[in-house]
Image (tube, rainbow, N blue to C red; front, side):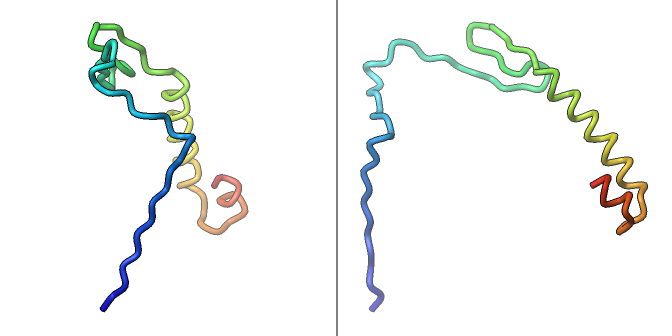
Length: 79
């Protein structure tokens, strides 16, 4: 017979759930590619530019590292 163990934990730092009947308003959010997010009221937030710039730089750096001889000093610097 395998012994069974049960644990129970109460965490005071977690906020209590709000009953659905007490909610004042709900907001629907759609995360997309052209717009960062769109709410159910039609408000949009554009995609942050730092993300696009860093993706471009990452692609360039990965291409440069790919052209280095594996194990060389320059390859290690490019990593």
